Structure formats: C-alpha cells, structure tokens
Image 1 (cartoon, one colour):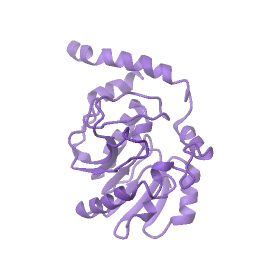
Image 2 (cartoon, helix red, strand yellow):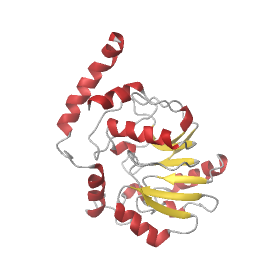
Image 3 (cartoon, helix red, strand yellow):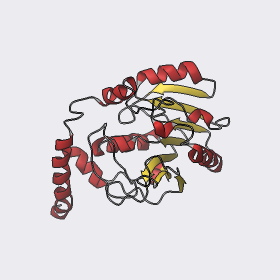
Length: 244
C-alpha cells in the first residue's frame, strides 16, 4: 500500500494544484450548462457547423471514408454516436446498414436533429456520457469528446461505456502526444488514450483524420478502435477521481 501511495500521490498533488488554478473558467458550472453555452453562443465560430470547423464536410473527407470501412470490417449493425453534435458531417456517411443513435448532452441539438434527420434507422436522444445509462450497441463512436473532459469525468465516461456491455469504442486520440494533462471539463487539450493515466493499449484500428486545420500541431489527430471488454479502468485514474 505504501508503494502504491508513493507511486500515485506526487502526480496527483501536482495535477490537483494545476486543476484548481484552471478551474476558474468553468467553476461550478454543470457539464450540461458548459456545452449548452457553446452551442447557444456559436462558440466554435464555424459558418457550416454548430460543432465547429472540425465537423465541416471538407475536414472530414478522410474520416468518413475510413469510418465506412470500419463499419463494414467489424460488421457494425448498431452504433451510438456520442456526442453527435449537429450531425453535420455524419449525415454524409453511408449508414444504410446501421441502426444509428445520435446522442448529445445539449437538448436543443437533439430536438433540432430529430426534426431534420430522424428516420426509421436514424434516431436522436439526449444523454450525458458521464452519467446516463448508455445503450448496448456494436460501436460507441466518441469523437472530440474526452478531449474536453477532466480526468474525473473521463473515468466516469469510461466506466459508463464499460457498463453498457457494448462491443467497440472508437474514440479521438492524438497518437504522438507523449504526455497527458488534466483540465477542467469544458476546456480542451490533446489526449493520447494509449498513454498514462489511461493506458488503453494498442488500438485494433487507427483512422488518420488527416487533420490540417491548425497546421502541423494536430496532424496526429486520429480515431482509435478498442474492444470494450479489453479496456481496464486505470487504477491511477480511479484513484485520481477520488481526490479531485
């Protein structure tokens, strides 16, 4: 036990202090209010998508093509896209053989999407990845979500994903990022899910988004696929969630 404490506590204390300093921006704001304010203020400043320029059609060309191949290769018949945002680019993906559920914490997005895009095979539902009951599906698609969450909320999200009994997780990961850092939920940072404190292991598949919007800074932005039953909730992340 002493060795365990020595191993984890120093990093925890450093991250704790840094997190407190950054907390002022989103202090005491519920997660739902944080992301609803992004939508209502058009925070991401894209003329095409409420979800930001990363959700524009011209930016997701490579991702759409590779995603269709993953859906076919892994025989995905049911899919949860969380957060689905405004469905701007996903509507261009061939989902004819998939029962698609788009979920988001922002209620107005779900209402708008349901009116515009709902069909027998496409539906939308309001869910909070960190606390809501997640439906069991073949694939949980989680793009540009965990990068906005604190370690504590990422732990809650991964725990929720595990509890769903779903088969695969396809999530954003910056595969060349060497060190992760904690943030206040609502901020953003690059996140490598193969690195500490997540250590999800080598992904089954990696989709290179060929992301060039920010020059050379984010060219490692990828969607990585893991089998959910193989994901072990990291002890360090669990311990961290007790203190923050």
